[in-house]
Length: 233
Image 1 (cartoon, helix red, strand yellow):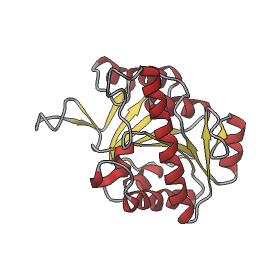
Image 2 (cartoon, rainbow, N blue to C red):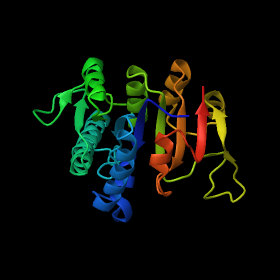
Image 3 (tube, helix red, strand yellow):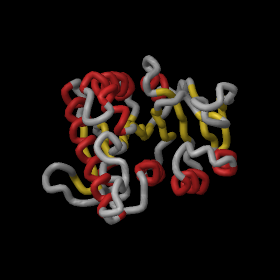
């Protein structure tokens, strides 16, 4: 199995490496190296990045939820600008699209514009989530994957797949090789949040979950070789 177009989701925390906040350049360069292997073979790659290395939701009741979510959206823009530059340094061409204006730093998202960049062989970063509060980057990547008619969403996580219970708490936890999105929802396995899960089911968008830190896991996943869990639709 080989994808033609994939959307890769990276957590903000993953970009921070052992520092837990901000950026770890070596980590990001390794992600870029792996992505480039597939871009060079013609795979069209879109990327969504969380903002958790800078902001984790509303941390104080003194901050309105809408404003807290807006801070999170801007954190994803910062992440995409940084990661995009590392990608460029390794020889890839990139564009950053947002659902709201960010001066000259990004361009406004449109499906036609994104498709044009994909055809030019560029890596497209979808920053800023959906542009609205109360929606996570899980929902953001699901929305963009459906709009862009991606073959699959690749979820690079700190865990190597989907389990029937928390493996950190239950040594007997079972990892699924494949599982349907209906079962994910019924069992509340939280691969992505509920809104994104419902979109996945309604629009039949498959997902693959794998360990970001496993050697060459992104490069393998982009070639359809998943050492983790496939979420079927």
